[in-house]
Length: 119
Image (cartoon, rainbow, N blue to C red; front, side):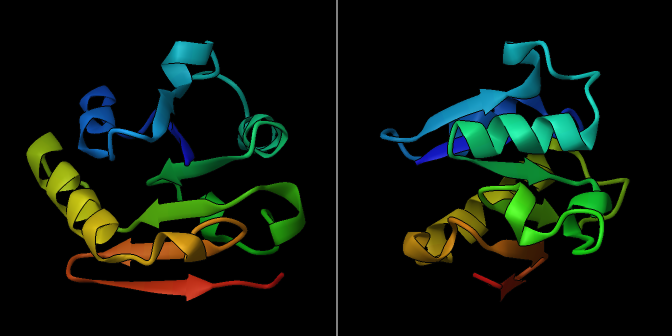
């Protein structure tokens, strides 16, 4: 599975994904200053799941299912450290049925997640 980490996630979060995953950070692609729409378009074109803390990606009016391949939004406090962000994301990745990730909007919070799949 391919994932694209947004600029608001630590670069080191790449290390928590499974060995068979392709994980890119927007910095790897020089997309860190691009708009959400451009990031979503790149991810859709390349069948990559966006992972972000940006709540705009969770807004189905701004980011309807038709404009992305899948989105995971972490809703964690701003004061969370890199270690805490990686822990929450890692716990989610261990628990989720990975077949449910593509084409879905998934909101991940401490200890739980919600899936919205409109397709």
